[in-house]
Image (cartoon, rainbow, N blue to C red; front, top):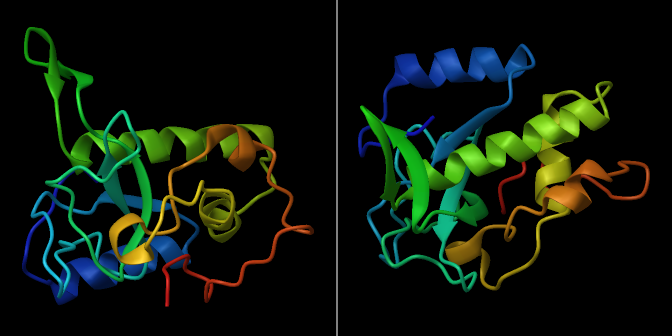
Length: 167
């Protein structure tokens, strides 16, 4: 989900929770509100059923625009990303550029291990992420495709309360 807003919707939250509880892995852009010590994660990424994705630059530093907060789950490239636009391609920045990276890695994990469910794939993404620092700013770290694809849940524990979010 490459959209974000500041207002919660009970209807949207219920719909996403129902999807997640039915086995759908939900990935959402954390938002482009930047830093505030109280947190700036937008909806729907702020919901527990959604993986909140922040953006890093080419040096694996949090992009200044990338939202932060306790709900932040994982980071991915989000600066200078070539994307499709009407009539061609353009370079864009944002957590909406980062969240498709995480979705792509999740797809690779599912391809390599089709027996995994959405909760296990979420664990694979989070438990194998490359730590970048403070979880308020970086969540569990940078998505790591190779490690996630090689994830073995019998070796790695799911110690993140079942939804992957930092506590």
